[in-house]
Image 1 (tube, rainbow, N blue to C red):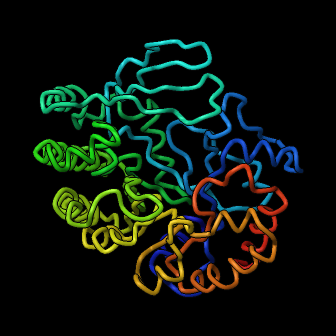
Image 2 (tube, one colour):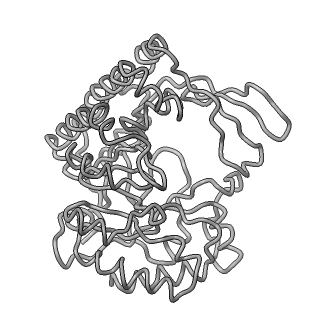
Image 3 (cartoon, rainbow, N blue to C red):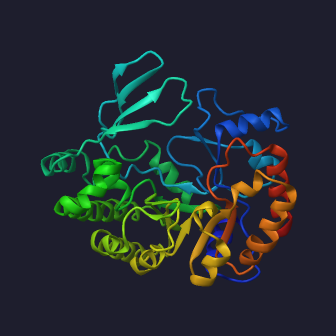
Length: 383
């Protein structure tokens, strides 16, 4: 059974199916630490990656851009990476990327989505948001007409036709979407704080954005489905923090649920039955609404935000899950790692519909010895 078949059957909760050996990804700083602690750098990560930049693993997989790990993957015999259709499903044409201010050790710049940010030149800290391109309905109308039209030209790589042929014979899961959602995309357009206040004082703007994004994605994906039948879809939101969602369930019902129902209904009508939402933090209050909207699963299930896979499985017996292994336990002792696996992760894994992995990017304060111990124990349990 190949990785594609394993993924699909596991997500159908079929018994006695080998679970995929997958991880989400790693901080570049973690991988560099592990090189010093014994990991052989046969396929070293690029020097230009900052400590906090991501090194993709099997779940993040292959898509346009980004560096995909091979050293850990090959050493630990992890399963084939997921691939994401390399479709630009947001801003195109891109804004001009340019430096606006140079402060010596840092600079202010505009990225391809028109967002103004502050960045340290040594990339020792995350980019800091300063402003977004949409402040008024007029700004939105301009971006919508110029950069959010469902025309494939320029949104796919030049080798698209050859990729289509490869996809037809694939042995790995293929996903469509990712990077965008009905909260995530308005946040990029308006800003982190601005999108929250707009839900209250600019509701027509939020509805205008999401109504257009819905039709934009349906028309865009419909063209892709003429060439390819993906195995799952991904919607990115990141709309929760440690103690709960950034918006109330009632706001979700008003501003997001109708659009989820239509998008997920369209995807399922085209044969995409597995639909994941990627949101960090404590999403428990929103999971019933995601499910009502047609979503079938979620990840990465951050344990520090109360996303306990054993409790989630009790509350939502058919929720598909990926992640959920507490990274904090991997910073501790092997006894704590054993407890995490034996008491929580492995019993849920046996029920199906769940691929265990560390609950987001693995940070640099996890030793190679501890990560190796955890992953080999999990591999043995899967085998």
